Amino acid sequence: MAVLSTMLVVLAAGSALGSAIPARAATTKSFSIQQVANPNYVRNGPSALLKTYLKYGVAAPQNVLQAAGQGSETTTPEMYDVRIIPACCGPRS
Image 1 (cartoon, rainbow, N blue to C red):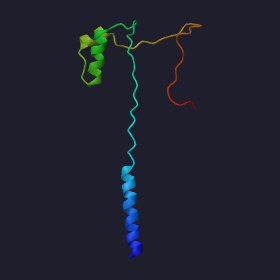
Image 2: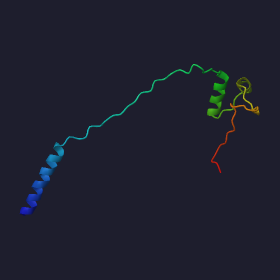
Image 3: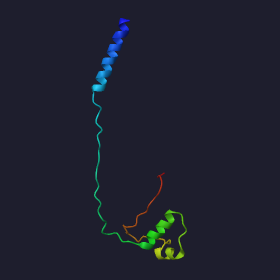
């Protein structure tokens, strides 16, 4: 019986000490980013509208397609042309 009462006293003292220890304060970390306007950006309304149509899966009207100038064209780099480089997609074997 003495052992049981001693254990109860130890548990009560431990719980009192545990509640007296303050909880760890939550630290908040933050950062900020400054936005800078791109001076070289050129707005293109028809292309933006076409992009919105494609984003939502809606068929774009013919006049929007023509105004946006969407199409395919082959590019042939000239000799020593450093602006057009061969590109490869996917893992290299």
